[in-house]
Amino acid sequence: MPEPINWPAAVDETVRNLARLIQIDTTNPPGNELPAILAIRELLVASGFPERDITIIEAGANRANLVARLRGSGAARPLLLTGHVDVVPAEREHWSHDPFGGEVAEGCIWGRGALDMKGTAAMYLEAFLLAFRQELPLKRDLILAAIADEEMGFDAGSKLLVDHYRDLIAAEYALNESGGTTVPMGGVRLYPIQVAEKGVCWLRMTAHGTAGHGSMPREDNAVGRLAQALGRLQRAAHLPVHVTPTVRTMLAALSAQLSFPARALVGLLGSPAVASLALGALHGQARSLFTALLTNSVSPTVLAAGSKTNVIPAQASADLDCRLLPGQTPENAMREILAITGPGITLEPLQTTEGAEFPTDTPLYHLLERATRRMDPSGLVVPLLSPGASDAAEYRRAGITVYGFAPGIMPPGFPILELAHGHDERLPLAALETGLPALWEVVSEFCL
Ligand SMILES: [Zn+2]
Image 1 (cartoon, rainbow, N blue to C red):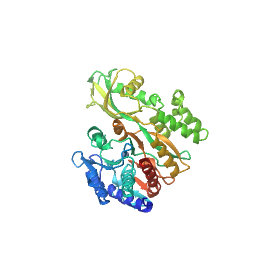
Image 2: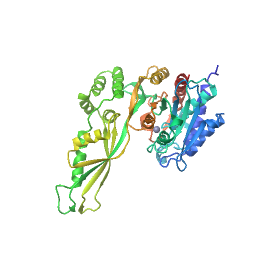
Image 3: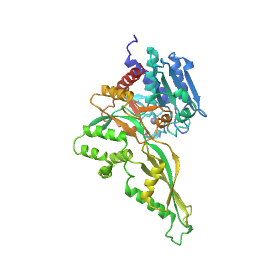
Image 4: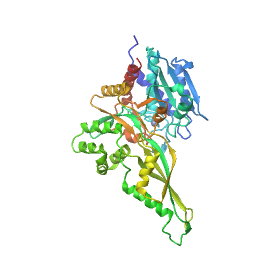
C-alpha cells in the first residue's frame, strides 16, 4: 500500500524545480536547452531514479532532449508526458520581476516559461517522481520527455525524436501543454483541453508588373497590384468558414451555458451558412479568436518591393502568415486566398505543417474531463482547437494521440491569456496546489 501523498511537500518541490528551470535561460533562438536538460537528469538521479532509464539526445551545440522511462508491466501501451523547456525571448525592462529569477512573490512564481511551459514540465516531472517513489504497479510505461526547440519549429526537438528516435517516445497517448486551466468567458469558468491544433502555411504573395522609370506612371505597377490584392483580403475580413468537429463540440458545450443573446450568437457560429454573418457581429478579441477557430486564417506580415524611389520594380511581395484548420491543405488555403485577391497574383508556400485533430471519445479524454470537473465542479470543460502550433502535430506523425493538460484553478481575474509569451509571465501557486493532484489523478488512474 503506497504512502498517502504529502501534497504541500510535492507542491514545494515543484516550485523549487520550476524556479531552477526558469533560472536557466533557454531563450530560443538559440535555445541552449542542454543545462536545463542536465538539471532535470540531476533531479531524477538525486531522487534515486536509475540513470540507465534516462536517455539524453544531443541536438546540436548546447542543445539536447531528455527521455526517461518508468517501466510498467506492458499490459497497455505507454503514456508520454512531454514538456518543452525552451522559451520565447523576454524584454527585461517591461518586467516587474527578473524574467530569469524564478522569484516567488504575490502568490506566484515569476519568470519566462512559468506558464509556457516550464511550469507544466515541472508538474510532469513531479508526477513522474511521485509514480517512481510510490512504486506503483503500472500497467503501462510512463515516459517523461523534456524537449528542445518547440518555439522555433521543432527541428532540434519533437521532430528530431519522431524522425530518428521514435522507439524512445512511442506511446499510445501523450499529455502536452494547453489544457485544464481556468479561462474566464462570459461569466463561465472554462477549462479548454487542447485536442486539436492548426497547421502552419506561410506563403509569399507576389505581384508582377513592368519595370520602368518612376516619372512615367504605369497601370501595371507591381506595388499597386500587390496593395490592391492585400486591400481585398483586408476587406473580406476572413477566408471561408469550416466548422471542424472539435469546434462544433466546443460551441455546443459553450452555448448550453450561456444566456441570450450570447447563446444565439455562439449557435450561429457553428453553422457554416451563417457563421460569416455571426463573425461580423463580433468585435475585438472575440472576433480574432473565432476567426482563428473557424477559418484558414491569413495575416500579412512582411512587405518587400523596390529599392529606389525613382525606379518602378518589376515585382512586389508580401509574406502571409496563414494557418490551416485540421484537415485543410495548403492548396485549399491558396485557392481561397486567390478567390479573394483576383488574378495577377502568385502564391508560393514558404513553410507548411499539417494541423492535428484528435478524437474526444477516448478513455483518456474522458478521464481528463472527469479530473478537471473534480478539481473545479462548477467549471465547464470544452475541447480546444489551438490556433498556434505545438509539438502535438509532430507526435501525431508517430501515431500518438495528444491532449493538452496543464491543470490548475487560476485566481479570479488572473490574465492568463496575456501572460504566455507576454510580460510578467507567472504561475499562481494556487494553480499548482489544485492542478498537481488533478494531474496525479489522471496519471495514476490511467497507468494502474
Ligand atoms: Zn509552449
